[in-house]
Length: 120
Length: 493
Image 1 (spheres, rainbow over the protein chains, first blue to last red):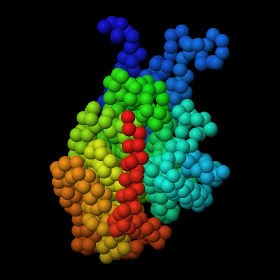
Image 2 (image 1 turned 90 degrees about the vertical axis):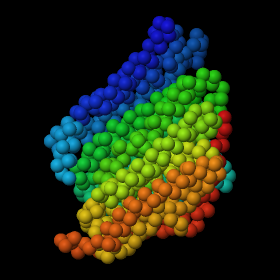
Image 3 (image 1 turned 30 degrees about the vertical axis):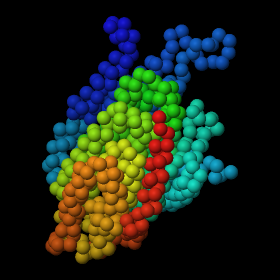
Image 4 (image 1 turned 45 degrees about the horizontal axis):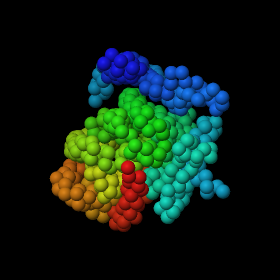
């Protein structure tokens, strides 16, 4: 039981971050905090990908003498791409929040809904 | 020589044109270049469609790295059809966009609009042609990120909140997709769809695969606004610039639906999704919910674009209903509805944009009496509306008929009944427009209006004509959809 738990601790950590991030996105009314939650949500996936690629005692994937057991390099490459996507998403999200702040004078979801309701 | 590289040129040409447009910093030059690019991608997609139909799937190894190690672009009858739809819609929307964009977006930002539209086009075409699961995610994000900005360019400040909401939900969806693909990769050790499909049979522990299926269904479902994951769509389509609404409504959700079809039918296979797991009834229930609840919501909207947006959610229900049958005829009907609804909704949003240009908005109070002041536009809109209902002689009828016969063939008479009764709701929301445009007098203070300029009306009418043509001569689309369904199901486990 404990072995199963500690043997999979990277998964537990990913799941915790995943749920924590999603919770912040749903529960927080501040648009910037929502983006922080979204960032945590995305980061959890990086760990989910990278952890299984690592072999204990594995080396870098090099063809040659003494390199028989190696870690899988592909997850790292994929996650580098995902990190770039995540950074772009965060930057765009913050830029939109800046524009929302200029247009509405607030970044609180409640204020935005109130302002929109007043327009109708 | 060149013809060998058509699959990659389909994506690379629009992708490279985007930075060129930004460097040019001119709205007009950007528009000219985008029209040229759209024409070239449409030609490329047509050539690929013909080749994939005549001589079978085309495989292209990016950088000459052979699949499954390298990224493979694999074009068969299914994604060739989707790529053709996307590039054809782009070619129709871009001539229309010039005047619409001039009216809705500041002069100094117009070149950015065209650059983003090209990025979005590149992303959507990339999703269609790639045979690699992670490459698909990258293209999904290229198209999504450019979409968020395009929506934020709308005039109303609510466009900003709509774009923000879509960004949060879209990113959540894409992340769920990545988790699902990650689980599939851990189980099979490959990212190539065809390779994945052949290795899945050897996987003994199927629980990660079921979890992966759940993740990709939820993730892709968010992207194509599967009821009840549609919260982002109404605001996004309502407040986006007219040309963006038309382009996205006709292409973005359809491409995501294709992704779901590819994963269900090519990667997992019919047995894994519909026999081993109860996804058929679940998807059917959500589809019926979309058909009734979203269509009913469309009836009470106060804005024409918003009405069309809710109608889109309902119409996506018909597509997913076809998928949920888990059979070749059902999938073919879904594919036919992807094409037919794509052109119908594209035409309707373009016509709504033409009305917005003349009367300054699409709220119903402004549209009163349009049947007299803009007779051609209003009449074309009614034809598009008939296609939403599924009246014989329009595109919507052909695919709904295919869906009903597929359901009856499988013995699901209640699905046929649901399709027919939900069409009555479509009749009710289309009638809202008819009543407003033809039976109400224009408001007393209304400005003197006439038809929209020809460069906006003509592309919209071309698409409306396509709606009628696809209704009167339904067999080309239905045949293409049947071949697409066969191609999607071509790799049984």
